[in-house]
Image (tube, rainbow, N blue to C red; front, side):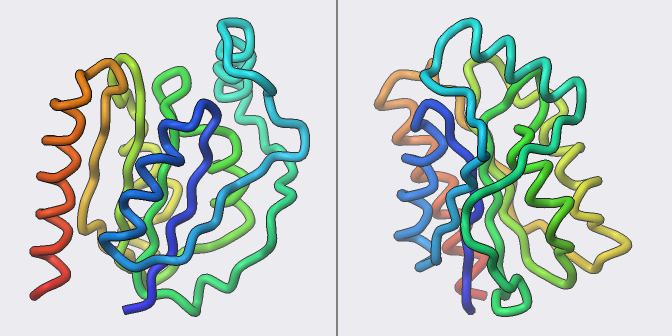
Length: 165
């Protein structure tokens, strides 16, 4: 099964989790890179990012294009901004229709996933596009290292069990 991980990471937490997942599903990686990214993580840039979410901002992405038809499994990873997925993910989903794929959705946050999964499910068109979600996972960056490691390993075991069927 050919796999792809599409992710955006501002502070590095989502990127780190994406790299760990890569070893589990043997996936290619696509890091989304907005043309005018927010810059250094900090309070004001998080406010700006939240405003972009509210405004449904669609930043221009500078990364290479991929042919999603080449993949059977696509994982989508995002930080949670203002209770939802990031503008970079919004741009990717607008530019790329995902059809008849197995999906893994994951997010990182410091307070909760909010409506991230419901919004992602709607954006990828679960019912109308024939996509199947095999796993959803949210990681609170506030957890201790031991807690994060335990939750991540439980998630990876769930994915391995699914893929072994």
